Structures are given as C-alpha cells and as structure tokens.
Image (cartoon, one colour):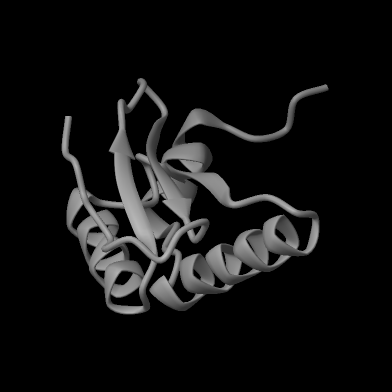
Length: 97
C-alpha cells in the first residue's frame, strides 16, 4: 500500500534544501577518487531540482580558482553537467554551450 500523499510529496519538495557545502564535499570526493584511480578528469552532475544555475556558476568559479580546468557540458532535463580536469598544467578554461 502506498502511504504518502501527493500533498506530502509536494511539501517534501518545498522543504528540500541542499547546502552548498554538500556539493563541495561531493565534488572533493569525486575528484579524490578519480585522481586516485588514475583519471585526469571527472564529469559531475548537479540535480536541476537541487542546484540553481547560480550555484553551478559559483562552483565553477571555485574550481577555476583552485586551478582546475572546467567545461560546461550540455544539460539534460534532470542535470547540469560539468567536466573537471587536472590533467595538464595548461591554463584553466571554461566553455559555456
């Protein structure tokens, strides 16, 4: 039997907030794990429900400041995507498509 109502689900959505610190933690973990496994980049997705375009721009700015290369990838109906690389000493770049 399904016990949740549509009203409860809507209230959950309205109450859902994800602090930016959690996005930074997830990014740190993804980069750490990727680099430890020999990768030179990771692709990270931000839920469009939980992450505004401004939040993504702020994260990109922080990554660029930290010396990473960052490329905005095409978004889909669910996610904003960025490709983060640390494979070269070349200047970081940001391309918005």
